[in-house]
Length: 242
Image (cartoon, rainbow, N blue to C red; front, top):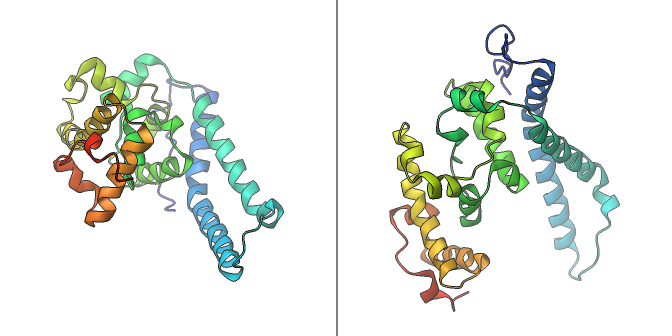
């Protein structure tokens, strides 16, 4: 990770605005970002070790946790630190409004699945699956390093307490009109979100809606982004294919 990445500006942003608890909290965010790449490597190594064992043995058996104890303990410790840090970062409502437009919403750069795309819409970052949150933190790091995001806004983004789904229900498109690029991206992704919402109204379970869309992507050999032009079917009409 580049040493140029600075999450703290003591003489600038924090001067007169925060106390020691704020500085400690943001310092924890820096430590988390520094840990992300290391933990991703450890997770990959753990998966490789599991795969190797499965490939070497044809029968099913129970794998002892002790075999992966060091990696699992490191991972659980990291996730615990991440959860506590996000929950404990303090901020004032007026600061949240003034430091970042659009209620702190930053979209995932490349959603890897329908499930992740829906989670982005329906939940706030602290509720995301840990793998999705890790990828999101890496995206934020790149935005900060490129000067496109103020590091002081990290706590606003991670502590956002209103989902995109709730914002859309409350304000329509008005909450995002100051950022045309964000609004355009949401309008594209909304075609998928609305398709799932229609499926839920038709009586399908969320897992069924996601499964139908994922199955179509697989069978048509297309990417998720093709749905941004519109979902070419009603999910209920394809309920029997999964």
